[in-house]
Amino acid sequence: MSSFSTLNADLHCHSVVSDGTLTPEALAERAKANGVNLWALTDHDELGGQQRAKAAASALNIDYLSGVEISVTWMGQTIHIVGLGINADHSGIIEGLRRTREGRASRAKFMAEQLLKVGIPGAYEGALHYAGNHDLISRTHFARYLVEQGICKDTEHVFKNYLVEDKPGYVPHMWAKLDDAVSWIKAAGGVAVIAHPGRYNFNAMQMDELYKHFKDIGGLGIEVITGSHSPDQYKTYGQIAQQYGFLASRGSDFHDPDESHIDLGALPHLPDHLTPVWSVFH
Image 1 (cartoon, rainbow, N blue to C red):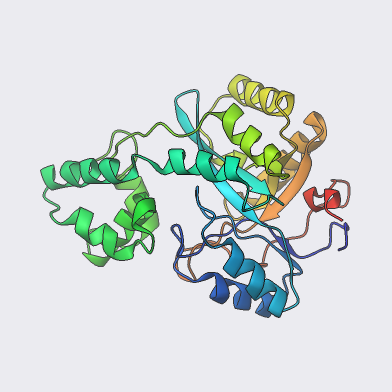
Image 2 (image 1 turned 120 degrees about the vertical axis):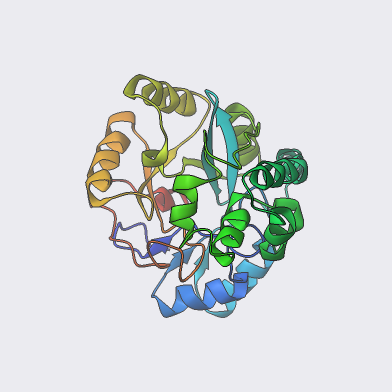
């Protein structure tokens, strides 16, 4: 496995096991067609697709890293930590993720109640229709229902007008603690990476605290090139990676052919001066 920054590595995407719309096998086929050399499926708080993804990648001769994206509450906001190269059968991370998933169903029902108050009925049942895994019902599934009903033109429009703070349908949820998420990943033999740091609504001092604490507890990387970042942010987070000594990761955050900003494997390469996160896997 090459450690060069020019490797077409896509280490962040989602299948129908969480809030994507394609099966692990279909994602593997798409990765192959798009020239991906190193792939990781990183479903939200769930490892149920890992064996399928690994088998599909092997059949297509794609190098594979088992992965997950863990929902974390930090300073009252939700952030995401990607775990790469984990042992998907490790009991500690399996149990930790099970606890993290608890409460999604009751939260979803409360979200539907809030939407009903603004004249949108049937949202819980509608969202369930889109959830391949009912235990992982999420805002994305509600967003697809709102699009289906013609209430919003696309999911991007949904998340500007619904399901976010101070808008109809928003219900906060307490996720895993940052220290716990990183410890689960490390115990399972993996590397912890801060997902899409450009998406978080923290000030510079809070982000500095996040980076320092993450590094102190054993976090090793941040996503630099991601579908959630603009080209200007590629440069910004490349500089952050250098400043804090983080390994750099690359991942499309692909969910769906029509919804996602960028396709699997279609990202620019990491800059040569950064150390890729995959350099630690031999």
